[in-house]
Image 1 (spheres, rainbow, N blue to C red):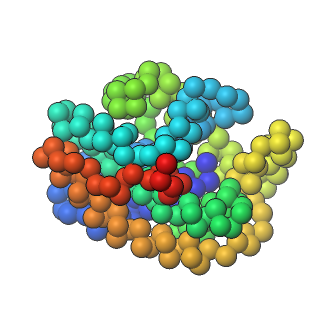
Image 2: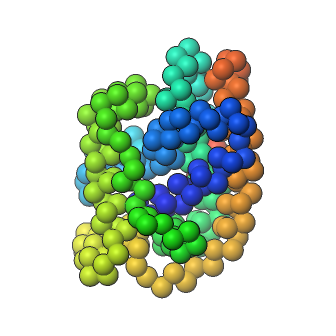
Image 3: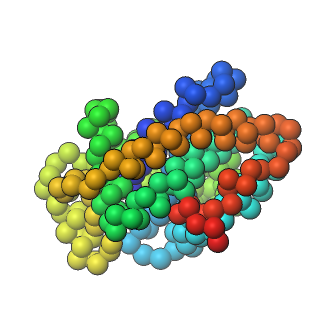
Length: 252
């Protein structure tokens, strides 16, 4: 879940760099865009302590080339032209662009989860949100779940459960009370889960200088790519080769 605040910050930072038309579309459906910013990470919180087809789907999206996935959705949106679905997919693409740009740098630290936690901590300290758990802003309405279910080839009830789980664990992992955070980390550690480092507690001692530079560079790239994607949706043109790598920045 930490990294979710970073993805929200990124989406907010990209927005002013977009054309007025695209900004207006996104602002009209900000709830869809914000949820899209979490990308396939949303599915990791569907019963996170055990295996499930939903979690496996999220992992598959991360590991495979992103091009076929986005190509199929853009073709669908070209035919459908639903602005709510477009706003969601633009957020989703932001997630991919940031992941694929920063994961190679994050992996160099050898502490993937701790690095993402520290990056979240940096943005929380910088921006001082009232509630850093971005999941609280997400809707679970029937219409939203149906639209996302169609896009993701998933039953709407699974979308709804994923959002509910995301909200529950977000409240735990971003909790301001240290005893609760320590309890969460001890439980995850006892289960021998690597993501124990996700809990927002620790020394925050990782050098983030290169990662911050990559983040800033990605804002400019994303503003260009989102305009190109929107053009592909409205005109039926091909998707850029930028989407060939997977979410880890690897060409598979």
